[in-house]
Image (cartoon, rainbow, N blue to C red; front, side, top):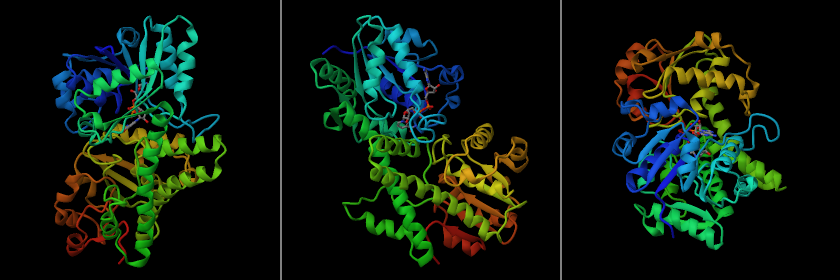
Length: 478
Ligand code: NAI
């Protein structure tokens, strides 16, 4: 098969950026161009100061430093990159639809469709198109229809190669993937296209870690993987609620059941609830597909995973209000963490936002500290929620003006300032640095009784209780 020497990736986000940076680093013989419509994002990727890259991931700056300008390029000239590439990865966003048919459930494929139309219009020679974005099963069919609609004789092979990296460990996941997945057509040209992508991955991944399947299986594997992962979190969180009522300890249970090799130890950490751009969106998309194909029992089964997650976030917020004598109005609540998990600056669907919203509904004063998230981002998230009140508990809330929100929310660069004179501290993200704070100092500066609500079970409950804190964890009965 033909060796690929020029690839392009449409979408320079959390997936496109790190994925292409690693491909470029591992394949110096391939020219990799990452394009985006967002000029600021491309400018940030090109920033000489590597601390200013648009995405924070451990190890990413080093990879970019090595490859950028050598065979890795970031550009806003989408047409040129498409024209020159033999293989085009599509890694644009596929958010939940916020309007019309399938609102709040289906994946919004408008960005994907725009890419397909642009590729169809610009291409002058045969190309391999790789779906990197997470897509509903059978999207490749829609892509094919659009791509071949110009009738100009250009041949497109469509592959599905969904990305399984986790934010916070993206570079490590890309360097040593459990597997890369490629779905392709069972035709001669389809198999050749699969082989061309296998050959790229083979530059650093052993063949046995590259799984090849049919296109539909590959597309559906990504939704299934995220549904299973999220389901584990909701399962252990469901048990955490029972632990709190009965005196059992959810971390002990996780340790006990995790030893069973059929269950496995990973992803059994109970918390305030999962966040991130993918789990909820992909499950809702799966639920929508099941409804579409008239499988209501299957749809309901998976929908429950999201419901349980909403419940977990709500339970955490409600526990704060209940513990603070049934109102947080005018009380200062410090938030440690805003990102949806540690080691990322991504805040999409972060549990912190939903907990904040419930407390703001009761007119709490929230003081946020996060080591990587900007003040601008936090206010943007709060504003977004006001315009998209969808979800079990959120839709009951009243819409607040940004003036009101700004009068109640303060963002700090110093965690001790955020916690000084607070009635309560809530831990929303599991950043390592929170464990090593001088909790005696924090206690001295907080109002008494000083409450800590640990939504990630990361601080030492015994040590904090000895200092004098009232400590609430997830899933630990007394
Ligand atoms: P993102 O929102 O960070 O990046 C998408 C980028 O595509 C944006 O910068 C946007 O400006 C650009 N874009 C949209 N339409 C465009 C067009 N027509 N031409 C050029 N650029 C365009 O999204 P993210 O997180 O990278 O996700 C991308 C896809 O990957 C989604 O389908 C997501 O479900 C999937 N995914 C995400 C993972 C994650 O951890 N974030 C992990 C695995 C898959």
